[in-house]
Length: 395
Image (cartoon, rainbow, N blue to C red; front, side):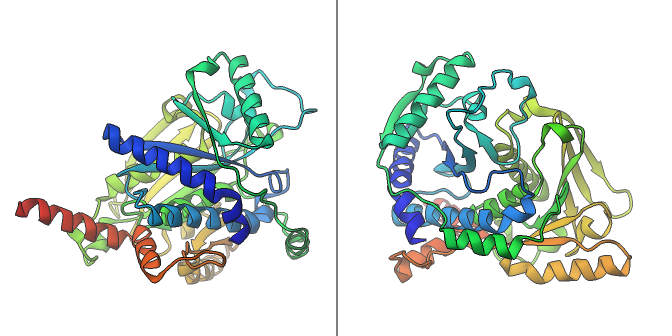
C-alpha cells in the first residue's frame, strides 16, 4: 500500500475534491471515470493467471479511494456525492498500429486501450491527468486520437493534477506470481458471483469488477464465442430479519443498481447502444425473478434472484468459475461439494480480498477506520439513511 499510495494519493485526492465541490455547487452527483495505466497484466495470458495480481492491485486501489474519501468527508457510497468507476487501460507504444476502424473493437472486460477510451461516447466535460512527462504524453495522445474519431478536443476542459511516484510491481513479486501460477491456463467464459448488493458500495463494486476481470475478454479469433456473467442477487424473502430493514432496497432496485454499475465498468459504449436484447423471466415454480441481458458483442449477463447460498452454480453445469469475497470463501467449497455430487466439474474459485483502512503505509486512526468501515457496510448505510429520515420527520 505504501507504493500505491505514493503513486496515486495526490492525484486521486485532487480529482475527488474537485468532483465533490462540483457536486455540492450544482446539487448534481458527479461521475468520475478513473482509468489507470497498468501494463504488467494486460497480455494474452488467461485471466485466471492474471487474477491474483489484478485483484491485489484493485483491492488496494479501492481501499485508497475509500481512505481518501473518509478523511475528506467525500461521499462515494450509494450515489450521494461522487460516483467512482475504475478501469485499467494499456497505453499504446509508439510502434503499435493505429486502429481507426472502431466497428471491430469490442470495448469490454474492464481493460481497455487508449484508442477505446478516445473513441468513447460518454459525455465527459473534464479531463484530468498527472503533471509529469508521462501525463503530458498521455494527454497529447488521447486528444490526438479523440480528434481522429471525430470529437472536438477543445470541448474537454483539461486540468493537470499532482503526479506521484511510478507504481510498478516488483520483479520479485512478478517472479513469485509466475512461479505459483505457472500451471494455471484455464480460460473462463462463464463466471458467477453472488451477494445481497444492498445500497451498492465500494466493497460490492470491487467484487463485481473482479468478476468481470475473471471473464475472458473477447478476442478476434474467438469473436463468436459466448461469454456469460451470472450474478446471483439475494431474494427479498431472505432479508426480512436484516437490521433497518425498512431502508432495504427491494430486489428490482438492487438488480438495477448492480446492472448499471457492471455495464458502466465493462463497457465504454452506452448500454442502450450495446444491448441486443433484454428479457425479464419469472420461474413458475420458485417464483425467482431474473433479467437476461444480451449484448451485441456476444456477452450475456444474467441477474438471478437466489434463495439459497448456491443459486445457479448448482443448476448451470456450464459455469466454470465463481468469484467470492474473503468473508464468504466457505461458500465456494460448499458449491463444489454439491457439484461433485452431481458429477459436474468443480468451479475454479477466485477470492477477492476485503477492503481495509489499516493496510501497511496508511496513517489511519481508529476514528478513520470506523468511518471507513461504515462506507463499506450496507447495514451502516441503511442506519444512516434511517437516522436522516427520522431527523427530517422531527423538524
